[in-house]
Amino acid sequence: MAPNLIFMLVDDLGWRDLSCTGSTFYETPNIDRLAKAGMRFTRAYAACPVCSPSRASILTGKYPVRVGITDYINWGRDGSDAHGHAKGYLVDAPYADHLPLEEVSLARALQEGDYQTWHVGKWHLGREPYHPEHHGFETNIGGCMVGCPIGPGYFSPWGIPALEGVTVPPGTHLDEYLTGEACRLIRQRDPARPFFLNLWFYLVHTPLQERPERIAKYEAKRKAMGLDGLEETREGDFFPCDHKKGQRITRRLVQSHPVYAAMVETLDDCVGRVLKTLEEEGILENSVLVFTSDNGGLATAEGSPTCNLPLAEGKGWRQEGGVREPLLISWPGRVVPGSVCETPITSPDFYPTFLEAAGLPLRPEQHVDGQSLVPLLTQQGSLSRDALYWHYPHYGNQGGTPGAAILVGRYKLLEHFEDGRVELFDLESDPAESVDLSKLEPTLTAKLKARLDAWKNEVGARHPTVNKAFTPWSEAHARKGWKPWV
Image (tube, rainbow, N blue to C red; front, top):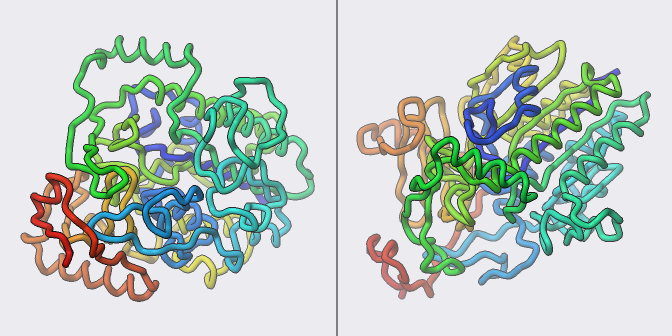
């Protein structure tokens, strides 16, 4: 029988937030098992520095700009323009507020290949009628328009509309409940058909909440490691958009947040429960497990709970800390245990990877930007492309500004839409993106900028427009010499 497919997507988990990827403060023994049993990717990239676009990219095999979803879907519509996003020097480009039903989603493709298809957890790809059950998932537990725990947060009674009517003891943890439901689906599966479990955790998104005893554990660990009292944040520029006017962007310099560490441990427990269920059912050996994140760790705003150093910035930024992800893939009998891959990969690649692993025909007209990772997983081939792209024409809630980027080999070029600047970085020698080489390497800079422009034209990228009502309101704007538009 074709292998079962389990896709575990974490919300806002940073590239260094696992023990197996370098953290000495967070504890992830169950997730580390996946790294030991399979392949760890060192240059895995989310297709966007925020959630909804990356999720759309995973399910369609396309860059977010092709799908029309280039920013997180603001279901609350509480911002200052028509798309719920505040204005700075530019006005955010418009974007879609749902995953189009015309897209043949990964779930639908697998369903047509006789897979059982289940979605459990966060969705954040539109209101009804765009929920998971309309995109090829036979079962949807917890997936709706909201992008994080609302109301009381992670502990019941929850504010998730898709879970209204669920009866659980007060104080039940959201992701622990969802994990239990995922394990129930595995146990109650049709054993004659393979399944696709799309387990998208709400963890580790804000709000920062955990049980007191688990927080106390990491408060003690923080003290024992000598992290108590260290300077933890570095102040930077002001937020460049109106809804956070006057607030400074800060950067966490060390992983030491007890509440966040406790949340990571709860996540690890959930992954351990899934692994245990697969083992108890005797199907772990015939299962492909993927574990990754939807964007970089939250490191510049909203409490800055984690640290992505030496990578620059975090969620909401096009720098490495905002888009480079942890990625672990286990496939018993096909992937060499403990192997490591340094090839850059991106979110659209999961669609053709799952199809090939399932033995189903590829759909190149659908997953136009994705390439199957099977040759890398089996160490029998390579990918044919040499570039990855990003287009984020928005102000991020975490301080990022509108722009685009291209990665070719060791070089990454950032384009800034506010002032037209470009920066060039050699990630091999400078993963922190601290030394701009654009003036020292003008030929390479021009070549990469031309490739980025050609790609944007090809995919029909939409750009922000000048905010004619803009008036500088911060030191950062004044230093750049920006004037009111007249």
